[in-house]
Length: 39
Image (cartoon, rainbow, N blue to C red; front, side, top):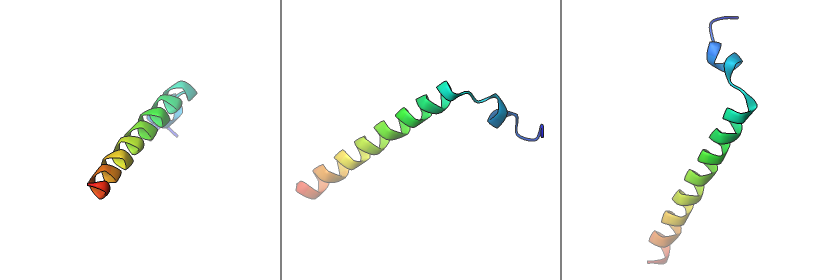
C-alpha cells in the first residue's frame, strides 16, 4: 500500500499538467519531424 506514495498523493491537477506537457512535447516533436521531412 505504502510502496508507491507518489501514485496515491498525485492529484488530478498534476495529472492534467503532465498531460498538457506531454501533449506539447508531442506537438513539438511532430512539428520538427514535419520540417525535416519537408526540407
